[in-house]
Length: 395
Image (cartoon, rainbow, N blue to C red; front, top):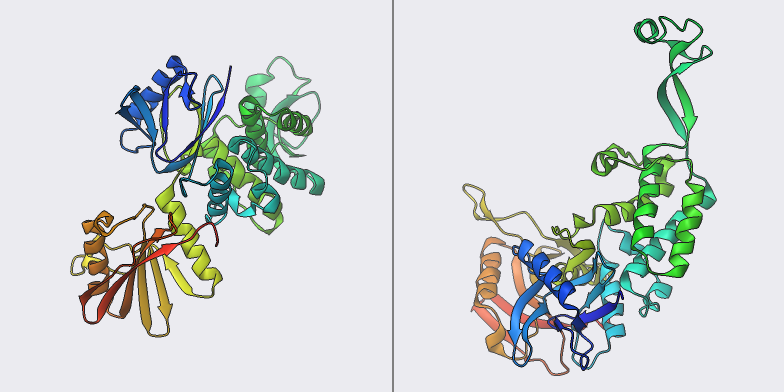
């Protein structure tokens, strides 16, 4: 029977053990192990050993959802603190997703945040269906589409060469080319394709019912047989503004590797997010909301500027009048000074030397504990570095 398993970062999955909740059947374990080996370049999960359990699978710093072909669903949520519930962790994940640019998650609202007991995939499907509902209420758009047909009557433009080839015997027919005003346009095809795709993935009776209702609305529309190519044909203008959010969701579901690429035939669906990327997005969003002039992943400087080699990409650059503050965000638990990476210290020093106007440097870690070590350093008298801790739950 299909199950939904919720893990926090760095929690373990093991082969079935009735005394533990984080277990999976051996067949599922083997398939997940194969998925890990096929994606060794990105550690979504890690194969390791645990005393008393043997081989286990350990979640890493990627959060989101993995659904197997047999329906087994694994949700991975942020490890904020040991004493925080899974619901709080999931709520924080949704808050962080909301800050991603060019994603459908910006429309996450208070009601969605209160729905933390709903499986992540079902929540995402529900949000997509809400957008489809808005679109249907406003009306599905039609367009002129060029068609060629062999008709019993003359319509549009007669194609002489095809007329001779096709109707040499059947003189009563007309091979014609004409424009027809229909709703079978590429945007509607992609929406229907998304509806069909999600109908196979959803385990929620409510979502399945809504999917059936919308599939009925799109009944006379074809599905897309070349998804990537069809997405490349879309041109959203002022008249097509109502389609924007629906199609962003469609791209997220149908081309789910747009966030984290993966391969593996035993995986039905995966939507996984690098927590370093999410943490940077959330901190940047918070600073912008506070009124700071913030740019993320600044591309102004190179380590070797004479040849524009070895690009420097500070996570956050804040401009205050003629001064600059550079900060790097690190999704990592810091409980003592020795856990600060030497490479991170070198990296910030390079930023400080290359950005002439820099007055302050920061490394920002998430606040996981009530008491975090207070740390600050000086590379030089005019180049201080401070370690700060960002409380995601309260901001």
